[in-house]
Image (cartoon, rainbow, N blue to C red; front, side, top):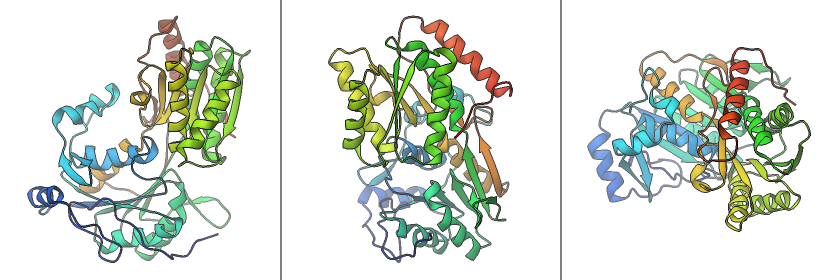
Amino acid sequence: MRATPRSLSLCLVLALALACKSHKEEPPSPSAAADAKAHGAGQPRIGLVLGLGGRGDESFNDSALRGLELWAAGLKYERGAYKLASPAEFQASLEPELAHREPPIIPLGIIPSVVQSRVAEDYEPNLQLMVDQKVSLIIGVGFMLENAVERVAQHNPGKPFLLIDSPLLNEKNEPYALPNVRAVTYRPEEGSFLAGALAGLVTKGGKIGFVGGMEIPLVKQYEAGFKAGVAATNPQATVISNYTGSFTNFALGKQVGQDVLAKGADVLFAAAGGDGVGAIQAVKEARDAGQEVYAIGVDSDQFHLAPKALLTTVLKRVDLTIYEAVRDQLQGRFQAGLSSQGLKEGGIALAPVRLSFPGKEEALRKVDALKARIIAGELRIPTP
């Protein structure tokens, strides 16, 4: 069912003082205005519309913002204003695989224009706002924006759009293409399989947890891949699954995480957005209390959330997808269509395993061997 617009959007990010005209507007801070004056003249603007949850989720949305703001614009967002990121901050955001990528990831000289959606009815007017602001590329972040991107793109055939994490779907729920929309989906089951394989090698008690957000096909992909990975390295292990039903409830995620730990899980994979951050906090507190438990994060590298407990993160490189789309647009190479990103394409990956544990070197060798088989097409991961 398609929603009709009924409420105003809140513009959290001010596009370097190029503010929203028709929606509720925040006054630019002095530092944001100064940055705009110093760095904004004549530079192309890229528009990005966030779904619910938005900035600060330490996961999916923050990955999107990293790709646009830090990588493409060379800026960091602090206390309501943009500031130039230092070379050290820029480099620290690049994982080893990306730090040496060719062509290199370098700032592209764009101005980010980011709008936060408060309710689903905001999606379409927020996307149209980007059209009205005459940005060079409009990005819709998340599967929930699929209907809105479809409608606004159809009404504005001369404007390019990027839809993240969903294809365009027709009335029969079948993927189809529009000539001005690049839609990117991912194969998270591949990274989740590797995470499950690692969990199966690390667990001591034979019980492993999975905490999902909304019980939808996208999240079920993570669960299916994770369970298959556990079975590949530890067929006797049991996976305890639970869903929170949302992506924005930290307290509920923590509660569900505590429940899974109470059932005996000693490794917990959280694929639940903001709820997952709560589940990781439950693992962190249990670890601080002396339990030998581990967490696995999702989407953005979440090691900083629990540096004594986080094994790795299943990365969905939304940041790289957005950066490369912006670069393509600026270089006149942007093409519409549907693409699927997995381990082979670099759209899915595991973050570095920084913690030490018994048998780590052998475990990583086994995981790397499985990764090579997936990339070679020798091993196909089940999906729901």
